[in-house]
Length: 447
Figure (cartoon, rainbow, N blue to C red):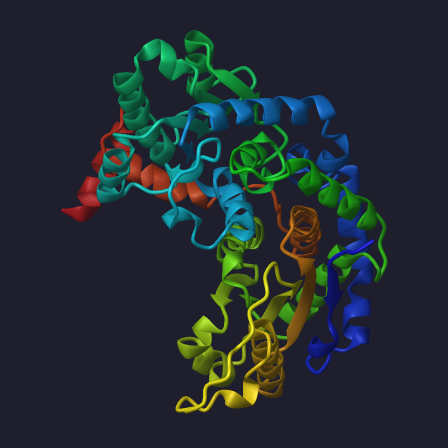
C-alpha cells in the first residue's frame, strides 16, 4: 500500500537523534492527550476519529447534494473564511487542471469559486458582475452566520440569486453548512428550507476540511471524497501509537527539537504549483494552533522553483533561524519531454529528451543540498502522487502532528483567542450596537 513518507535525515546536522529522542516522553504525553481528549481544548477534538467515524450515509448525502448542484449550476460559490474555505481550496487546487479557470464551462462540471474570505469591494463587485449571466449556486459555511466577511458576501449573493431566479428557485441552489441548532445561519436555513449540513461543535474550523465544510465543495468540483476520507482513515490508524513509525509523532518531535535549537521559522516548500493553497491551509493550521503565550514556530511557505528567484537568497544566506519542510510529489499526472533544438541558442540541448519533472527533481535535490550546507535543516515529505487518497493522508498527518506539537509547547492548540482582538477593534470602529464603550475608547485613542 502506497503512503506518504517522512525523511528527517537532513535535519540531523542541526539536531541529533538523541535530541529528538529526548522529547519522546513529552510527545508521548501529548499524543495521549490528543487520543484520550484529556488536554486543554479537549472539547475540540472531534476531528481525531473523524475519518474512521464518517458514515457512508453522510458521504452519500454529500454526494447527492453535490450532484444536484452539478446538474443545476455552472458555477458554485463557496462562502467562508479561514478553515471554512482553505481546506476545500487546497484540495481542489491540488487536484484540478492548472488552467481549469480559463476553460469554457462544461455542462455538469461547475466551476467552484470562493467568496467571504475578504472584504474587498472590488472583489465582490467583480464577482457579482461575473455571476450576472451565470447559473450559480451557493454553499455558505459559518457556524454562527454572523462572521463579518462571509456574512457580507452571503447577503450580497443571496439577494442576487433571488433576483436572478426568484426566491423559490434560489432556495434550491443554496446549501448552508452551519451549527446544528443555533445561530443566525441556522435560523435562516430553517425558515427558508435550505439544504443543510452540520458543523459539529467539537471540530474547529482549521480542522474541518474532512467534514462537510470541505467535502461538499470538493465533491461539487468533481473529486472523490470517499478516497480522501479513506486516505485520512489510513493515517488515523497509522498515527495512533507513539513510535518512530508514527509519522505525525516523528514530525512533531523533530520540529520541536529544531525549535529548541533556535529554529523559530518553518518554511513549507513545494515544487509543484498545485500545492500553493495547501501551504496556505497549513499556515493557518499551525499558526492559529501554536501561536500562543508568545510561543510557537512561525509558519511560512514558498513555491519553488518560482520563489528561488525571490526568496532563495534570504533562505540561503539570511538569518539562521529557519528550517524547511519540503513536500515532493513523486509521480506526475502527465508526461512532457524537452525537445532538441538544432540552433541550441538557449543551451538546453544537454537536457533534451528528459522529462520536465526530472529537471524539477534535480532543482529540488540541488536546492535541498545547498540549503542544508547553508545551515537550513530540511525535513522531506514524499507524496506518491497528487491524488485524493494521498491528500487525505497528508491532511490528517499534519492535523495529528499539530495537536501533538501544540501540547509539546504547553499551549492549547485548539483555541484562537488572539483572533478576537482585531474583531473587537473593527466592531468598535464600525460602531456596532453593543460596542458603545469600546467605540468611544478607540475613537479617543485616534483623536
